[in-house]
Length: 248
Image (cartoon, rainbow, N blue to C red; front, side, top):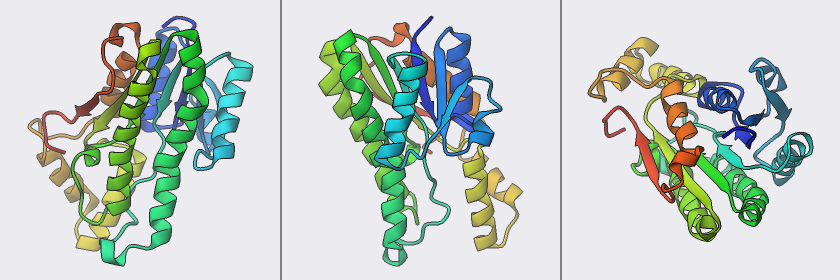
């Protein structure tokens, strides 16, 4: 992985931050991006602030990475919006659906579209998309998030078919509950809705898994880093669940 150029989205915190640090430790030249320059500046690698829910923002992130570091070899698409603000499907605000698709699915498509062609020309590339266990199983009051994360898996597999003949792999990781800021927001929303404590919500989430705990961001990032490595060249078009043996 030494000297490979990596672009990691959602890199200012959580899984993205840990993945960026692991790739940098392995010798990659890493650019991270999200909307918050303040978060990005504290990670310790190159960064560019961009709105990845727009084609222009995606193009800006790709252009700045290539201008400053060189052609992109590794693309980790990790940014996203959660489901804490969603409602039952018949109560769902169509604007929530559109915003979720714009960020969770349109952005990943734009980033792949802008980078995969160059990878194919150079005969090497790795794409890793962060989906969710909700990418294979539906959650209640989460029609937009569930649909978008199902779509991310489909996108990863479609890219694998298009780019696989050229030495490029494309895979998705499907984390269960991870202790991140986004998951904490959903825990607070659920706690308020049910009239229980946030600690109780997390305790219930932990009970889903055989080890009676939720994931740490680094545990998901380790899988992402492996899929970005030369050692993962035989893994393509896969949706890999990282959920401690649990169903979610």
